[in-house]
Image 1 (cartoon, one colour):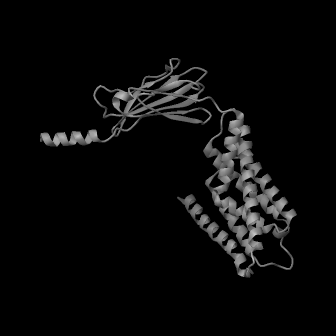
Image 2 (cartoon, one colour):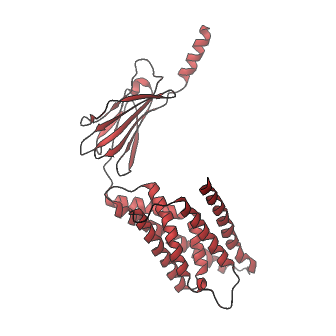
Image 3 (cartoon, one colour):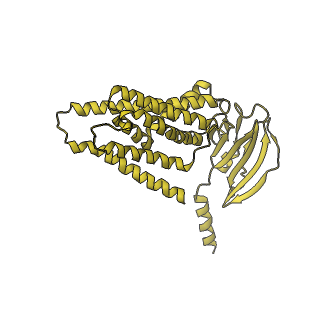
Length: 324
């Protein structure tokens, strides 16, 4: 029996304890909800504890609870008008407990700052708020990254490029799409339009499928209205795609006090990503045309059927998600 107890104890000590977590979430100017989570299986004599700035005062007594083998304490603090930006906070007692700690601060502008603390370096300093230029760069990168990693938007833009058969129509079509999605993106971001709904994702997939079908139609003696004025399609359906962009922006969050700048930069990033995709598309088409090959007529249908098949799959998936 003694051997069994020793074996269990040895096994327990052989597993590293989970790191301590100190999370502070700003709910009002300078006020934070605090959550401190540590393993209930601590070494004798060790008691990790949060290290908060002297200016922070408790607004409520800590409430303790258990989550598995983790002990969680929650309470609220008021750190004054200055908040935690530029302040040091951390976790003490980590050296004795032989564990690391994670400090996470979620500010009112949705910015998340976090750092790892250890026994020899128990403090983490919350960095200063981003400058307007830094916010603009960050949201522009997010906008460009969202577009270039969204195949439904990219297929739609590719379809517009195939639909616009002259340079003038190409410029008009791309510009109309930019105006359309910029309008609904901005209106949704500022709350003028209702927030994005799951049905918008389905509508975007349907727009890609419809465009693929339109492109696959046989050429007629008299072009259709869509073929003569593709910018009407680009502008109209661009309104739908703009709501999809607004959904991505909503998921990212907007910085308080810099909402117009963030919305503008995000939209600018989308436009830059769109231009980069169009430039790459045109270069690829030009390179293929220079190859000394006689492409069979049926090869022109490959991108259209690929586009239509994927769009149909997205339609089924997103319609099924709505019915759940």
